[in-house]
View (tube, helix red, strand yellow):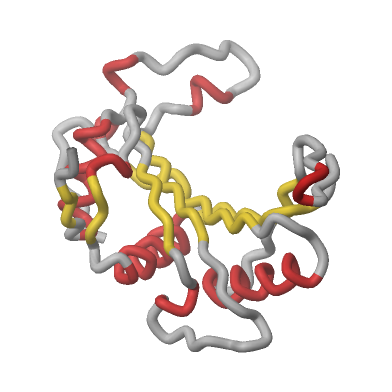
Length: 178
């Protein structure tokens, strides 16, 4: 990754994590097929099952029933997966994909659009949501157990800073949409 030199190393922006979410809507065989998709795309990272929060009779969903999967990638694996996912999107995302906290969220409608992945009729078609979280060094103060403190606003990553980071490091083209 092409990292720009910053005068203060504590102001450097890094990718904290990349979260991949596949909402299946039901358990059983469809959920196992979605696990295969995540295994293909992430290189063997084990997904976490997401459970239904409430019962919805019309959709035959009960509270506690596994209905989705998610995987958290960090470090080099996160950067490699993000590069592949942005390739699927032709390195273009709309500006509304960045939220006020500087995070990037976008979706991919079909896993077969990834480079080198072929359609498998046994699996079917699955889409996914991808969330990218940015941070600066020093966020430990908000998570530690003793002497916990808030991260000040001046140290948090803003929307514009994360947009510039993605432009500089991933050659991302951000489309201005009203």
